[in-house]
Image (tube, rainbow, N blue to C red; front, top):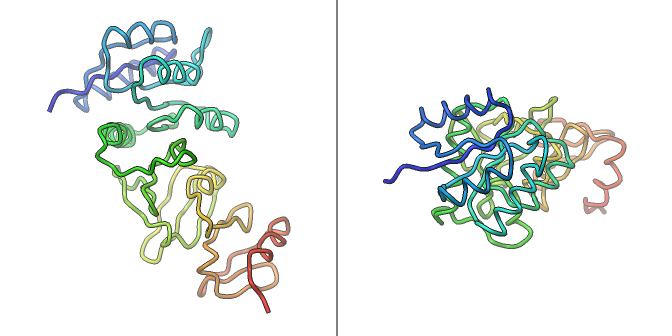
Length: 246
């Protein structure tokens, strides 16, 4: 198999060199490191890499999202954002350019490796990723009725129907299935958006549940088997509108 060539676009020299070192340790070839969008486009034309790693905040000139839009329009190449920006406004912009991955700084080498391999596999058509317009813009790795969750340095396929509850704690979300729980770095709002499931609903600022698994609705909470999940006041009306009662 031919070596994978990557261009790094990062305006912080220490982070750029750290990325280069990690990539080379993983066996990739870093054919260029750029700190601005203009140089990045020139290197892209010169080297025709397999993948780009893009920071979003690049200082003066076009930022990473604008650069990604230019890449899509002029020289289509898969790219992964490596950034410390994960606010809603940024994520909304990111979705418009359809990245192959999204990594939050400080990054983990295993996560970096996994995201690169998945991005390359998607580009090569090795994964059966849905191509409907509304899902093609998502930055997660959804395949049909499942989602891939990072677990100990690898991507594990988890059917959406098995995710009974998602519980948020600061910047982490725990997904509960009948046999296992997965802790991921994310917000609950982001998880809800990525699941894009008609069956999963936010019932509290810290909880999302699969309505099909709800066995009882009580004052201020719902039950899923023996589990008691609180229901926030602002979510109660929407919840009751979704539940069929006699």
